[in-house]
Image 1 (tube, protein in one colour):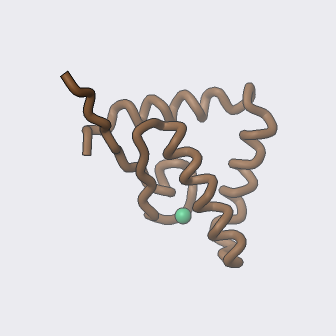
Image 2 (cartoon, rainbow, N blue to C red):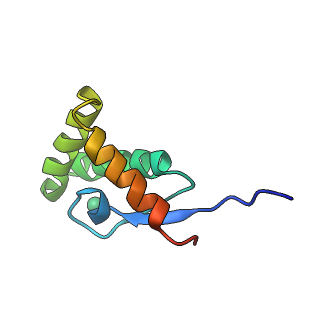
Length: 84
Ligand SMILES: [Zn+2]
């Protein structure tokens, strides 16, 4: 049986950001990477609303151990989503 890929969507807001931008991916890691990109693009575009979330995300890359709770919660939330 062929394994079908399951793309799910979370929002910027779900990952601690300020807007409802939709992030899609097959895994929580993909969605987190999409959020990282989205935050960078928003801040590069001088969107100050995203600056705090961007700093928080950068802090997570620097302190992965401290961020495990956030990471696990995000993975759990992703897993609980219905397939798209
Ligand atoms: Zn956003």
